Each structure stands twice: as C-alpha cells, then as structure tokens.
Amino acid sequence: MQPLLSNPLLLVALACGLDRLVGDPRWCPHPVVVMGWWITLLRRGAEAWAGTRAWKLRLAGGLITLVLVGGSGLAGWGVEQLAPTPLLVVALASALAGRSLEQAVLQVLKALPDSVHTVQKQPGQALQPARQALAWIVGRDTADLDAPEILRAAAETASENAVDGLFAPLFWMLLGAGIWSLNPALPGPLALAWGFKAASTLDSMLGYRRGRLRWLGTAGARLDDLLVWLPCRLVALGLPLTAGQPGHCFSLLAAALRDGAADPSPNAGVSQAAYAHAAGVQLGGCNRYGGQLTSKPLLAQGLPAPDGAAVRHMLELSRRLELVWLATAAVLAFITKTLS
Image (cartoon, rainbow, N blue to C red; front, side):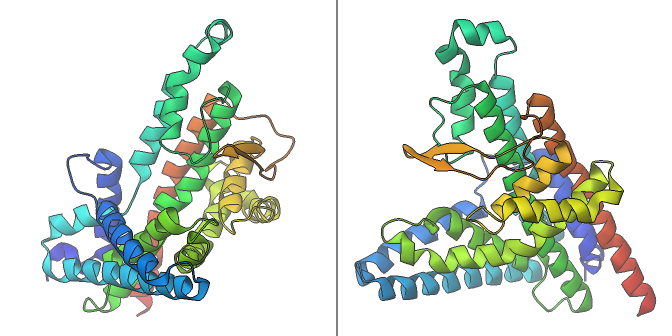
C-alpha cells in the first residue's frame, strides 16, 4: 500500500486543502456533471415508461436513486482501489464545495454598490450585477430584490449550502476514512462521498413538489434528507466553538432546532438558523419562486438584518469549523489507535 493510503485521514485533509486552494476548475469535468447527465437520461426513460401514473413514477424514482447512488459509490470504491494517490486526492476534493461556495457568495458582495447614494440614484442599474451573480446560486427570483434582500439571500445560501456542499460530504468522507483505516478493502472516503453527492444531485434535479417530480423525485429527496440530518446538527453543535462561544453549543443547537422546525425541509431551516444565531443576524422572510410568494420562518428573530460583514463572518465560521472537524477526527483516530 502507498504510504499516504495507510493514513486515509491525511488524504481527506489534503483534499480539503486542495478544495480551498483551487476549488472546482472549470476546465476539468466534474463528477456531479456526470451524475447530472445520468439523471437526465434515466429520467427520460422513467417518464416514458411510467407516464403520469404515480405508483410507476415512485418505483422508477426509487430505481433511479438505487442505480445512481449505488453506481457512484461503486465508482468511488474503484478509484480508491485502482487510482494513484494524487488522483484520489483530486477525486476527494471534487466532492467538496468550500471554495466554490465562498467565491460565489463573495462575488455577490463585490457586485453590490459601495455607496447607498448610488443605489438611490440608479436602483435598477446599480443592483443588477449583484442580482445576476446571486441568480447563479439561489433558486428564488432575484430580478427585483433590493440590497437588504440580496444580502439576506447571500447569507441564507452561505449557511444552507455550507452544510449541503461542504460539511455533509466531509462527514461521510471522514466516516469512510474511519472504515478504510479498519479495512482498506472496504468502501472508503471517496465511495461514501460520491454516494452522498449522487443523492444530493438527485434532490437538486428531481426533488420538487410539482408535476411528475412530485413522485419521481421522492426517493432521492428523502435519501438526501436522511444523509444530511446528522451532519447538519453537528454543524449547529460546533458553530459556537468557531464563533468564540464554546459554552453555548447545546443552547445554540436547541435554538436552531426550534427555529428551523417550521421549515418544510428537515435540514435547511436548521442550518440557516444555526448560522443566524452564531453570526447574530435574523434570516428568513418572504421569497418569490417562479413568481409565487413563499413565506419562510423567521430565524433568530429580533436580531439585526445581515450586512456584508455578517455574510463574510458566516464564511469565516465555515472555514474554522472545517478545521475543527479535521482536528476532532484526528484526535478520535489517535485515541482509537491508542486503545486498540
């Protein structure tokens, strides 16, 4: 076995560093894009077979989920067993979205005018670059958002996608590293991380409550909710450490669970609420999706609205928490090795 492969936790740490250093290069084909191609192909076949019959669409959705998640996990397992170490590190980094999320959010902040006078004088033109940058990373309508709403949207996507795009895949990666350290022949960090990314991509593409997707996307959406559930709550528990409030870990977790309970998603509201309390801002409110007004629960109600500094603080909290997770995993690995 190659020296690095005997220390899977070091591989994960190198992947985190690579993700923070280069992010997702646009010239390199991304595994999620390949997963998206397969989802599109499988969806066409499923809809052609099932038509509008709900039970057939549910069955097809379950089969698509099984094929995509299982296939992605097996592909990751194959890379673990056959690929050289540098390629394995690159593949692991592809499952993380720390830098790409941070860059996308910062792009929105950079596009906002520095001067309130500019916004008042030319409201439409002044905010258009920020609205366009925001539209790439959120599902809500952005064409008519004012500056405070743009900042709230940036804060909410920074908090929700930190869990979906960084901490959930990192959790499964670390768990796979632990399994691999016990037996390198078993599926390890890449197999679990790519399996999770497949479920997450299914939820992103099919997890909508409209038309045929109401039934076709159920299995993928439920699996994604399940796989994100524990990482989301671990993030809420750990954020006070990175925010300089180590004595408030359990109280912040309780507040995040309480505020996020009203959200239709079992995880999105909790993750946003955790960051809202940690950063000291209020999130939630009314959003438009496809022209339809949707009311979201208020999170950390009564605190100030997020400004640019608060959004940057959220991104910094994610960077610190990533290091905390890696350090904690290293300590647990050391204790386990010492006791064995």
